[in-house]
Image (cartoon, rainbow, N blue to C red):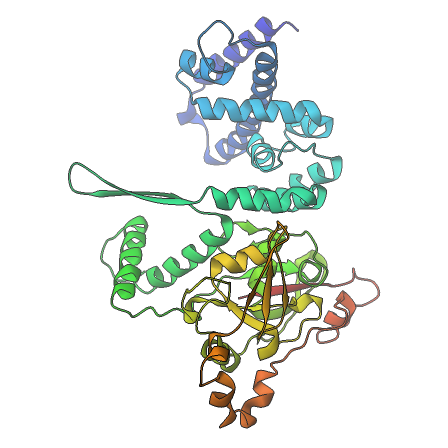
Length: 449
């Protein structure tokens, strides 16, 4: 069929729909036909995506003064240029993947699902297995699934993507003519999960105060409330009661796997960020069975106990990264040898690092060696810097501070658990229910809080 005839058929269909007397249609019939109509629209959007990509490839915008075809179409039709660009991107992805094209053209996958997946694919070509996976997922689960698929199929670039995301972060406060201040910003997934969780903790305390405030107003008030508390010295750092829950397979931590962590706050987090969080987190072992059913949810086991954290604060006094003086209570405990790589948890194997420098230790090119008393930072250019606790250069070393009462808690400083020699689904299932022979084997996961 010629393109002109196809477009005319779309117009005729719209005219026919306009003639329907909706007042005479019952609710059940409306519900049924509405779903069919929306599926049909999704299929039409897929065809528009094909055409938009073909037009861009043909250079249809050349000579019009527009930057690209999407901008030209937007100017001509009063539609969103950004949405037109998204459509062209979907058309490109469909051209690369016949399986995706068939699924979207047939209505098996909605255009919204396809756009959510294409938006995070990084130009990779979807395979039939992934297309089948997202066909049965709800829309909200497609983006995390696509991020996991991308991490598995393009693991080498995951760290670069995470670094690029973090480099785009910003927070800008701009004064307005009427005296108000406009707040704009962008956060990477890990930072966003922390901020969302902290704000939610404050907002939830006033969720039912009958003040009539909208949610976005309560969010603004929560931000101001946290700022006031900080200005009064009521926020002193350390460990917050607000928890960010991250669920990952065992292999992400124990074998440096590539699977991303799924947060309760929405975004998924790259594997390096997950391992950073694992340095100083409460950990639950979760054993799941068929259909993601939870067979066992273990008790929280904090790798760095409260007593050990306080001992590190007394010893280090501030971030141990050479030259950094961020106060110790604002730092995380970091395992010099990662816990998942058989790193024990005690005073001699841990140091305190601020959030920025803790992130660097998990980035490509940066490595750390040594122990809690002689911490060595290896830069990407091959140079090294060594950090020692500031108290080792004073007349009152931390060791003498501990000697009076440390014997009673020496076992606490040798904090448990030590990492298992090998973490597997079989071992994880030992503490829960044994899988029966006629069911899929349970799988092990960790939940960080």
